[in-house]
Amino acid sequence: MRLATDRGDGDPVWARMRAWAEQLPDGTVFTGVTAAEAYGLWLPPLDPDRPIEISVPSGRRVRRPEVDVNRHRLPPRSHGIEGVRIATVAETVVAAARRIGLLDLVVLVDGVLHEQGCTREDLEDVARGRRGGPRLREALALADGRSESPWESLLRMLHEVCGVPVQPQAELFDEAGRFVARADLLITGTRTLQEYDGAVHRDRGQYARDRRRDSGLADAAYVRHGYVAPDVRYRAAMILREADEALGRTYDPTRLDAWYALWRGSLWERDPRSGHHGPGGEPTDGP
Image (tube, rainbow, N blue to C red; front, side):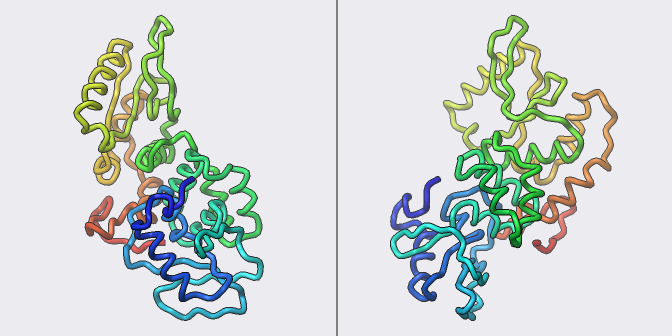
């Protein structure tokens, strides 16, 4: 797991932490979403004016509106880098669990597990007896480190909470047993793939490779559905309908209720940079 400082002195996240470190008391540890940004973890769209998140010894006082303070008797485990202390990945995640929604946290944990920032056991251990621990344990029960991007995690969660069984990163074979492709999501018991098509798929070379892949899938009798971020944001009903068709079951829009509850409690639902909102088009408060 790389820190922002590894990406160059001009990284704004690292520069912001370094500037604040000069103004904060000894023993300050950057943590939560602030540290998650420095690690490059999978995060939803964030308000650029949000407070920084720190942990300070219980006897210290920091009274500034730009700072979100957690006081500790025992300091969180951390690394010291160029005069800045940043919480370990596991400590960062449990601190973030107090500030973000469950769906946000599942995506964050998926990314940590996928990038091997720490182990599932590390996260289970740090959740014991800690604020944020109950929500982290809930997220761990839903997390899957096989997801390869944040939007792939969101697509997986949409299916799972709607009762659509899926296998992430499924290896696909033709009738002769020859390997064909690996799928983001394979609907269990079917030959239908539900995949996230990110920006990389708009590259000219990647586009040509995708078309060859699609041809191979069709020859092996697989059906592929490709989705983009606006589909997950605004067209969950379409995604569920196509999954229901693959399963041979009647489309039931009430299955989306669990998804919408997660989505509306998430920072993915509201993008502060665009003012766009999720299903229903109404702004909602963050967690």
